[in-house]
Length: 124
Image (tube, rainbow, N blue to C red):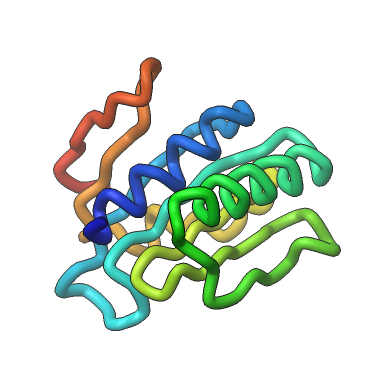
């Protein structure tokens, strides 16, 4: 499985638990942190945890284990690091505050649409 497929799977697992405004940022050539960020919003701390659990369980089910997981206990911003793909799950207010999409304005982005279809958007 290539890194874009991993990012897509993370997005799909987040979508299955009603993650909102799911975006994949392609960071290749922009940073060594990761090839892709997957961003998803949630309506509450419980919702953040539910999405994080679904992503972690779903990815383990296809043989991909996380390198690290941060923020689960707080439940406001969970980061699951799959080394070349990092998923950020935020409560909506924190996503707006930190605005990673603007920080990575040069990244190519894909928005998850209904039916798990990705819509490519050139840049911010």
